Image (cartoon, rainbow, N blue to C red; front, side, top):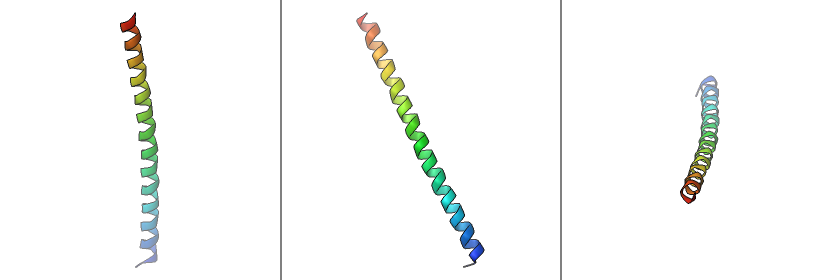
Length: 51
């Protein structure tokens, strides 16, 4: 295999791996935010129903 091709392949693999990790962290943050918002909505609904 051509060393240039091998180096390019390694760089692409590394960048894709980093992007996948970034997306995973990002989606985890979004899920946490969504669950917090849902919990807030539920608690607010409960308060309004009680009042």
